[in-house]
Image 1: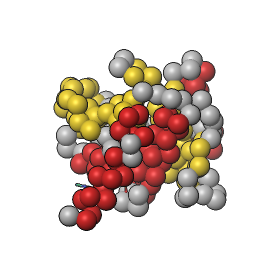
Image 2 (image 1 turned 180 degrees about the vertical axis):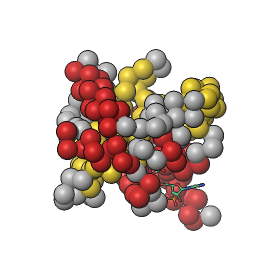
Image 3 (image 1 turned 120 degrees about the vertical axis):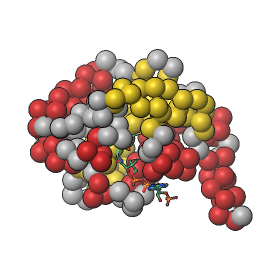
Image 4 (image 1 turned 90 degrees about the vertical axis):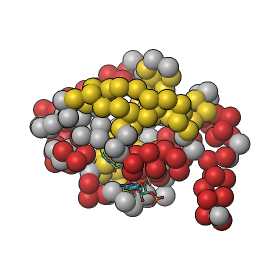
Length: 190
Ligand SMILES: CC(C)(COP(=O)(O)OP(=O)(O)OC[C@H]1O[C@@H](n2cnc3c(N)ncnc32)[C@H](O)[C@@H]1OP(=O)(O)O)[C@@H](O)C(=O)NCCC(=O)NCCS
């Protein structure tokens, strides 16, 4: 996979040592970690270091790509995003520090990764799931054209509990028909 993607405001780049301290602050917030499956609470520097190793391992094994979402031009880390090959296909996941919510960054970063998966990797579909009590993530996926295909129960490390997640998919067919954009335009026009 490519090591670097860019959008208007963001650079998606591999995590680096300089991101460890930042991630340790951003992901220490339970409001962030509780909405994810794999970010533990409490989140310590060692967890951020582990994230770097895990990202390198995923990349080395060809199992996907895990990026830091960095703002331009200073390349400061705002959060993380990744595509990982698991059972059923390529899974999209992301998390941003709370300071950076509500500015369209997740949609912008995930949109770039979706484009890359379909246009460069020729993937047939991308999966993503989100906890039912996480409407912001559901909205990001809806804006990108993901559609619900079911639910699953997943163990959340930060909650130390099982959460019910909605599973969604975006197929290359839907993506290439541009239906994701059309649906948004229809909604605005209604
Ligand atoms: C989910 C997350 C990545 C979204 O990041 P973001 O940069 O704020 O997302 P965007 O700004 O691109 O889009 C968020 C959308 O959700 C909407 N939204 C936010 N809170 C909402 C709520 N409580 N109910 C409904 N919609 C909500 C926003 O209005 C926006 O939609 P709009 O553009 O139509 O107005 C961020 O909240 C986050 O990191 N959360 C913690 C970790 C997490 O949830 N990761 C995903 C696990 S599946």
